[in-house]
Image (tube, rainbow, N blue to C red; front, side):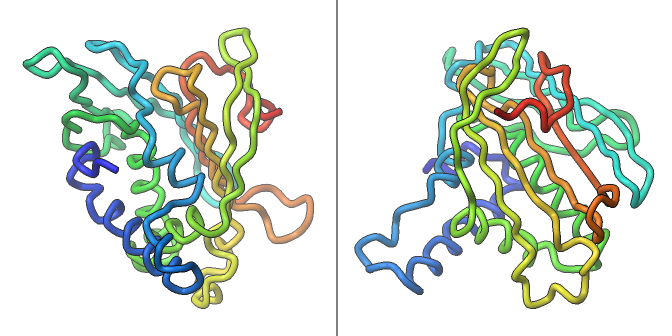
Length: 240
């Protein structure tokens, strides 16, 4: 895994991936297998998702927030790609949201993994801290533990530009077994879904988080979803 492919601001998240994986293996896996990773980790964080992206181009995503807890909004995410001086690809500049919502993010030099995954997760972790007054590192650790231990990976097909494409769906719920759950009970039912496909530029079709309501049939508390350009339907209907 080439950690330099990720922006510097994400170094804590990546380092935590390594530490969590080592700890989990040490608790129940023979020592000779300590360096392996889950299928979900490999797909999300160890794949060369930008291999098919042409240099000097852009990737555009739509972000939507809905739910009963607070006011929603819709915004855009744009990744811009530039060649290195030696002609290799790519430096990535990220414009995550616009105007007052825009997140200050440094460029990602020589990126291979799609930075939008870590941008989405770090913003999500910051939102969890805002909503619960909890620790950033605590939520980072729970997400990494879930990606390693509890993630479900399945084959799926998605609608993209009037075609059906093949991909993978990765899903997990990091907070259900958290000992600190009583401190933020309203948010523990949060689920994460990642839709990946090599048929989509940048490899990331969409990401979705949802906090369901406490009672059956009650509206979702918060739903946040990011979808690559070329997707027009509502997120759940894209998965088959």
